[in-house]
Amino acid sequence: MLIELAQLLDNADLEPGIYAADFNRSIIDKLEIARVLPGLKSTSDEKFSFKEGFEAYVGIYTYNSETESWDKEEASNELTFKFTSKEGKAVVTTLDNVSTFSGVHPGLEYELADFPTSARYSLKADNKELISMNFVSVFDSKGIPSKIEEVLKVEDFEYVYKFALTSSVYSIEQMYKYQDETLLSYQFENKGSFDTEELLTG
Image (cartoon, rainbow, N blue to C red; front, side, top):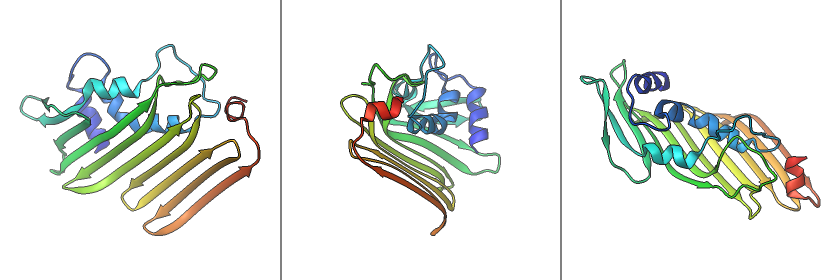
């Protein structure tokens, strides 16, 4: 269904500016980049901005199959696409609860112009949620992440990622679950006295 949505967006320009198909299609990948912060370097002069990308297309879009275009309804903090799949299901995909942090420390180079501090994504078919993602992060005054948490669910499968960094604790936790059963889990914790900026930049 995500592929169908991407194809519909590819075939119907919404507005000039940031390309809606690329923004919606890659939002989960960009959030993955945002949490893999240590050692991430910029590879392009044009950095991806969550804030600009989201604000450029905020609204509720319903696909009109007769005109092969999207009808837009205004919304304040929501990017929603509604369409009927080839199987005849009513599909709704929503990105909301988006906030960002742009005070990145000048000594760190990233592929992103800003970082999401919260984001929520879901895909439903006939009111049944098939995909959901919740993302939360916290940055200190230097732009160093002190907390990152992500929960991604795809039907009965769930992936959990947690990252914490303070001057005394550095920890990472990952977990893969099927329904209520944990399939694989990993946890790392190191306690001591850390220079958080040096730890991330090497």
